[in-house]
Image (cartoon, rainbow, N blue to C red; front, side, top):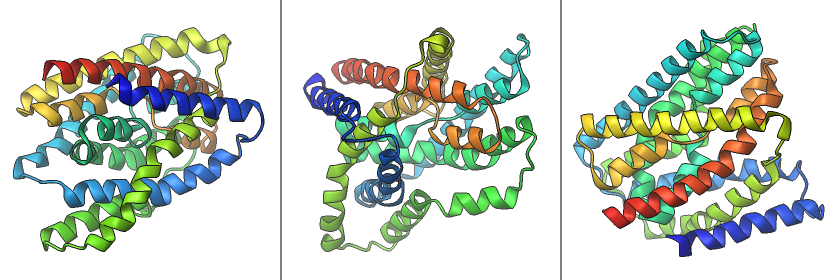
Amino acid sequence: MFEKILPLIIIFLIGLLLRKLKVLELQDSQVIGKLLTNLVLPAVVFKSLYTAQIEANLIYLPVAGLSVILSLTLIIVFSLRLFKLERIRKGSLIITFSSWETGGIGFPFMLLAFGELGVSRIVLFDLAQVVFLFTVINFIACQFGQSKFQLKDGLVTLFKTPVIWAIILALFLKLFEFNDSLLLSVLTPLENSFLFLILILLSLKVNFQLSSFKLCLIITLAKTFCGIALGSLAAMIFGFTGVERAAIIVGSSMPPSMLTLIFSEKNNLDTKLVANLLSVSLPFSCVFLTIFLRLFLTSS
């Protein structure tokens, strides 16, 4: 596993160097992000589901995802009642603790460790979280930012997300046993660019602030290990083993979704805290997943 991860570390460091030399700048991340969310990530998701064997019991993967995300939300909401924090800071902590950056972190690692089969499993697990993110988490951000939440707007945004349509289309074509080798050959180059673009994007987004490093590290550790415990429990309850179990645990231990930064800015929450938390948790998660998947693959 380390042999697969080492090139990724080198690419990430090259991205940092290019940013330092101002060959790439922060605003370039917007273009890379658009390419990923609108083209490359949907292509990876579509191909993984389109080519994977889907059994009936896998319907419990999104159910497991929903149970974990609801549990994380309850944990952070009740935990924050013990502390006197500003309303906007509470809102920021809730939306970050209750969301996952599966597309940017989980998918690449499952692709490296298990191939397209691994991606297909974590996509199914993550499905409930995607719906939860654009509805419940968006609602929470509005409430703590005292903005007006419109369920209609949340659902419209959800169904305008290319990944959702990639999932629907892949399952539809699979149901009717549509097979097109040309389509797969077109998707392959996009899939091959996925890891590279993700790493360059992360290298541009990372921005450590020592002033809040301790708080962000504590939150990151709490979120990661709560997720591992809840994911392990969900896998046991639903009887998942092997790749499916790995997908649940990896998905549950993800750092906050990068979309929470957008929700925070839109609703005037503590955007600085969200940005710092992402800067700490994203690299931490990469290191953690490298160790976890190495141990998982060794013990399997």
